Length: 283
Image (tube, rainbow, N blue to C red; front, side, top):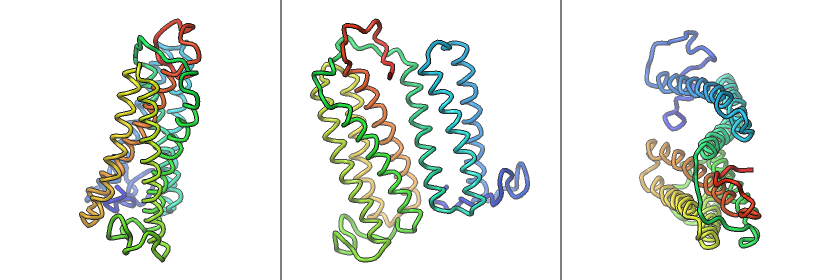
């Protein structure tokens, strides 16, 4: 929707052009479809809570995550309305994206905690001292990377640097929009390097866990592809389709990182011998 400049395809809220079902041109159709998708998601989250209450009432983790998802999808919907009513103020769009990414992570953790994932060889936490700071830092740095991209778009700097990896032939270009664009590239480079370090560390120290190895491979694979895809966007002349795909892949990077951290939490346990089951619930 952002890349097609359809953010104001429906200039009012909650109706669209004053109607529940408006006449459709291209931009109206894009914006209206986005609203309908959000509405359907909200209804599905309500169904999720009902099913959790019926079948998993005693699972406090699933209950907490389900209600968190309801709160986040409600906030996202209200922020979507505020975004339209304020005519796409950039910082509100930034907050809106942040909430959407947190919602995606919450839904992923609901799925994770609903699955019966067994591991025959769990690893004592003492065998991999310091995994927690790596996990938390990975989450934070990927989240910051996504927000830096949104900020770059919000201030109109997304197409300012027409070359890669340098911007206007410089590592530190002059001018606000050029500095913002180059800053996003630096954050991407740092995030890619750090996530690679964490993924390799997890794969080595948690080699007894095939689940951790697979999720670590996915996380760094998505991140590496996203880094290269950013370069392709510049070389393609900033195609709208490429830019839309860039945000989609960024969401996959975020999901991959969240699931890798969940797998690490399930693998590096304080005392595996005390576990009564092999269910990988995040505590």
